[in-house]
Amino acid sequence: MIIESNIKGDKPKQHPQGCWALLECPQGKILRESLETVNVGLMFQNQFQVPVTVLWTGLPPEENQLEYIANLGVKKILYLAGDLESSFCEEALLMGLKSLYLEKRPQHLLFGPTPSSLRLAPKLAAQLSVGYIGNTTYLRKIGSALNLTRPILQGKLSEILEFTDPSEGIISLHPRSFGLPASLGGKIEPLTLETWSLPSLAEKQKGWTVVETREESSHQLDLEDADIIVAGGKGIGSEKGFELLQELAEALGGTVAASRIAVDLGWATKERLVGQTGKRVAPELYIACGISGAHQHRAGMKDSRYILAINTDPAAPIFQLATWGIQGDACQVVRKMIALIKAPAPSMEQ
Image 1 (cartoon, rainbow, N blue to C red):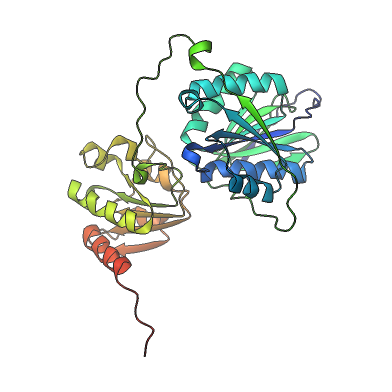
Image 2 (image 1 turned 90 degrees about the horizontal axis):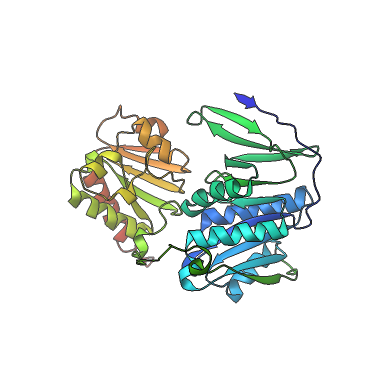
């Protein structure tokens, strides 16, 4: 079922800056979820005849990264530069985006479903007094109006929205709804790279102080951005069981998550929580180990492309959502999976 909500506005304004797509590149790595904004921006460019500009945040783009972005069909990158203290500070980025938006006035600004963007987008919209539509799964243009679809009521319904002022607005995307942009191949079009300096937090906002900066180990980074997640629940049995999950995750090149009860029992940190009150993820593969599949947990991982469920209870709700299911003790199954992954490949010699 689809609920339509059409809000009429004034005639569209002219926005020569077109559409902006925010691309997050912390530690020099392009975040996958953030890259989906480029795909939507290219949709604006190709289908709606609206030029797209990529706003690059994080470390400066390298030559191979510029070549990759140019191969996608992007013709302009605006690098939001700042010192290490400011460029990774959300408040400094928020102030910089606000100043840049007011000066350039783009038609639409796209944010990906990353933790940073989900915090920044509504704040920026409120400070600019422009429309904001989050969790977007689909968009299309009908006449001069842009229609955006998003799920409501835990995905049971969808609603179609329009901006009050159709000429501008801020949009954030639903995880894994638009896919990644494809390379065009062939001749690369010229790419323009401009730099915009972020404001110094100390100069623009008195009272803000960076107390400490901590760098997490690589396997703990970007739970929302991981392609493979190995999650544990009560059925994993103990904190030792989570060490086993970590071993499987490392063997697969993924990361570890947890259900609410596993976090409450102290087997995993709150940062690893997936669910209605935790993080919402959409990896390529989600391995649910010893998780019964309560509604609250499913709300955080139901958008995964493939789900492998391991549980002793054949009636566990998680099996209703799973692509594949294994009935058995989660720890025993995980040990066998690790052994198979680490086993030497069979010889091809006769």
